[in-house]
Length: 423
Ligand SMILES: NC(=O)c1ccc[n+]([C@@H]2O[C@H](COP(=O)([O-])OP(=O)(O)OC[C@H]3O[C@@H](n4cnc5c(N)ncnc54)[C@H](OP(=O)(O)O)[C@@H]3O)[C@@H](O)[C@H]2O)c1
Figure 1: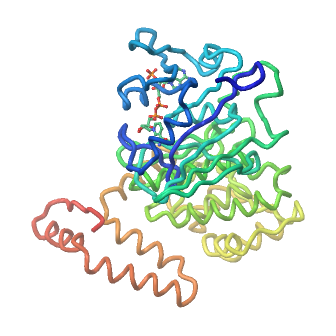
Figure 2 (figure 1 turned 45 degrees about the horizontal axis):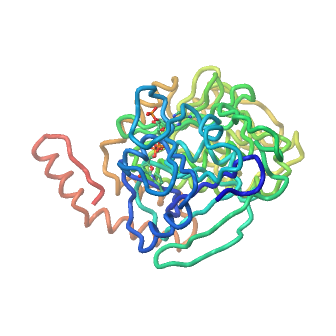
C-alpha cells in the first residue's frame, strides 16, 4: 500500500528510553512484550530503511518488507537487500508514493529526523545505559496524534505540525539537510573522559535553541555512557560568546537553558571547562556550571547583562559571585567590564592555565578517583538548605559504607593504585 502523493512519506519508528537510549553494544537494551508484533504490523508491506549496523544486529531480511540498508561500503551486500550510500539516495530508491519506515539506528535516525513526517515511538519506561540514542525532538515541530499504553512502555505517534517542516516543502524535491549546521555540538569519549565541543565558530560558539538541544543531548549521553570526567570546550578559538540574541527573548529558551545548566552542574563526575577566547553571557554560565576551569591566555570574560537590559537568574548570579568573588562579579555585571585570563587566574576563577590538552589532562586525573566521593562532594558544594544537606549526609553515609572505601584503604596499605567501582 502506498500513501497518496508523489513524495514518499517518511516515518521514524523506534523504541527509546526516557534518556533517549535506543541501543547498547549493538543490541536493544530491553525486551518488551508485544513491541516486535507492533513493529511488524506497522511496517508490513512498506519500505524499511536502516543503517548497516542495525541490519547487522537484526542479521536477516524481515519478511514482507523491502529493505534498504544505508552503507558507505560499496562492497557490502546481502541477499534480498537493496543498498544506498546516502539517505536521499535511499528515499529516491524507495520511489514516489512509497511509505518509508526508518528503523534506526542512532546515526540514521539523526539524519532522517529533519525529513520525517511522522514518528512512531515506543516510549520505554526505563533509563538503561546505552551507546546509541534517538535524536532530540523539538516538541514545537510535532503534535501527538495517538497514544497506546502497554506494559512498561507507551506507543506514541507524532505528526509533524503543518508549517514546521524544516527541510521539506510540500511536493518540492527533498533536499539533503545541512548536516554541518545541524551538528553544532560534538561529543566523544576517550579513556573515560568525555569531551563536548561547541562547534559554531562562525558565531564564536554562541548557542541557539538547536545547539542548546544538542548540548543537552550530549550531557545526557555523558551520563548514560558512564564517562568518568567531562571536558567542555569550544572550537575555533572561542569557548562561547553567549546566546544568539534573537533567541534570548524567547522564554522557552531561557527555561531550557536553566535546565541544561542544572543538568551540567549536577553531573556526578568532575567537569572541566577549557576556555579560550570569548567566555561571555551564556558562555560564563557554562563555565560556572563546571567544577574547574582551565583558561588560555587569550580568554576574555563578561556578564554583559546591563548592556542588554537583561538579568540573569539567581543561580547564575550566585555562582558568578562565588566563583569570581563579589567585587569582580559586581564589576562585570554592573559596569560590563571585560576581564582577562590574568584576572581569572589572580581571582581564582581559573584553577589552571593552558589549552584543551591541559584541560583534558586535568580531567583524566579524576578518572581513577572514587566515584561516590566525587558525586557526594559535588552535592555538598551546592547544598542550599537543610533538604540538600540531608542529601549530602546520605551521600556521606554511602561513601563511608562503600566497598570503594575498603579498596582505597587496602590499596594505600599495599602501595598500589586503587580500583574503584562506584560501590
Ligand atoms: N530501539 C530501537 O528502536 C532501535 C532501532 C534500531 C537500532 N537500534 C540500536 O541502534 C544501534 C545501532 O545504531 P548506530 O547509530 O550504531 O548505527 P546505525 O545507524 O544502525 O548504522 C550506522 C551505519 O549506517 C551507515 N550509514 C549511516 N549514515 C549513512 C549515510 N548517510 N550514508 C551511507 N551510510 C550511512 C554506515 O554504515 P557503514 O559503516 O557500512 O558505512 C554506518 O556505520 C544498535 O544498538 C541497535 O540495536 C535500536
